[in-house]
Image (cartoon, rainbow, N blue to C red):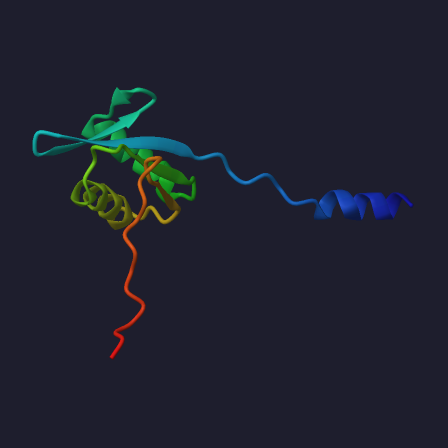
Length: 105
C-alpha cells in the first residue's frame, strides 16, 4: 500500500512553470516593452531574456493599438536570443482575418 502511494505521488504531474507577462506597446515609430506596469530598459530586457532562454515561459500581450510589425520585431528579437517558450496573447475583441481555403473554379 505504501509503495502504491509513493508511486502515485511520484507520478503526479508537476505544475507548469510560471512565466512572465510582457506588454508590447507601439509609440511613435518605436516598440516599447512593459513589464510589471513599467517600461523595460534594454539592460532589463537582456537580463530577462537570459531567464526566458533558460526555459522560463513568457507571454507577449498585444494591446489593440500595437501593430503586427512591432509584435514581430519583439518576438523575433526574443527568438534570436534563444527564447523558445513564447505565447502571443491577442487583444480581446480582435477577430483574426479569415484565411482562404482554396480557389474555387
